[in-house]
Length: 541
Image 1 (cartoon, rainbow, N blue to C red):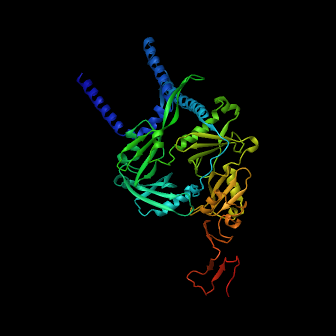
Image 2 (image 1 turned 30 degrees about the horizontal axis):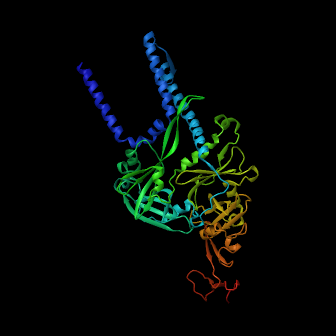
Image 3 (image 1 turned 60 degrees about the vertical axis):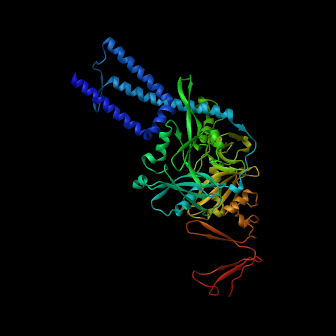
């Protein structure tokens, strides 16, 4: 009796220790726990059914006396009781059925919700030329990396923040791993202006008591999970406001629903839950979607989760039911594939604020864009523009191919096309394709591909790209400065093409003189000069 009591006491104490440790480190298991418990209720449902079957089997077996009979399955590891094999098989089946069917039900329910909320439109929002996104993320990161002056910090993330009214690429300055993550704090952020192709980088220094790249209890993910466990937190971004910076973290929640047919099962549907604002002192403020839109800190920011916007539009593939999606494919859409690192949705700034744009094509081999979706970057409100079969537009992949084939681009080596963005000029859709050196040292060209005709207009600088979006004339297939009136250069531009594929363009004014001299040379020792006063050129004797 004493021995049994002692074993029981030890078991209870060990159990309490295990529970205490699990409670302390619960942020580490939060993603898995959320996925199993909240996001996939169908798995729990079928695991419960399996549990009831096992209990019923054992109870009935004891009653009739055949539990414990010598029935085994031979394996490489020896003989295993058949009841164990059956139990494992049922658990695997429950997990598969619960997740697979739950995914189908979730997509169908989300499709119905989006279909009821979408607004049909016959126009596209005009791109805000002043805040045009002309710097691709790969180049922005290179610019930001070049600004780092401390070996103890690294760049984390790569999101969009609006700073002083201008959209910028935002990178957190996080401790660079190991011991630094234990003893250092996040030190502000680096902001790169995305409205110019030139390097325009601003480093804002501020310490965060809780931040990205910080270890264990000071880490952002740890604190958020401790603060509110049952949430699906998405990518954080740094927001400056009135001289103070905050970390904004959008989050998604999942609502449970039950569908009776064809298989009775619980499932979840994702919804935008709100934004958690983390202050420099580590305090966390939760904002509902409505409060986030009214928040002074988040004014002008896009915080609707990208993945949620993509999932909601992609779910419309199930608008005619599961059987149609898997078998007949009537009126079924799919999101157009995008070359390069970034995928849809595309974040652009219209005159009404930040918008996510998603291009959809018919399912299968068809590659023409027949639907364009815009999702408000703050509220998530969807709008849809549908084109007739005769009006199907060129998609991002084909537009990228057209841009590569233009003479300005085809003659360059070691360059790639990046970030085909949808932009609208005079109610006409263009794909804005960035031609970037493989070294990401800059932007060689920005090509605008007319989504209706396939005509390509190439420009060399962010200033010229914004001039095009404002309506400046450019001849198809020619660089803007070579084609004329938008650059203000009277046709003379010096283009320096570097070995890595990047270019640098210098506009020559009407009364400027160009002097080309050897390095360390002086004028009068073999210089070559040119003048733009009359458009003529001369080489002095």
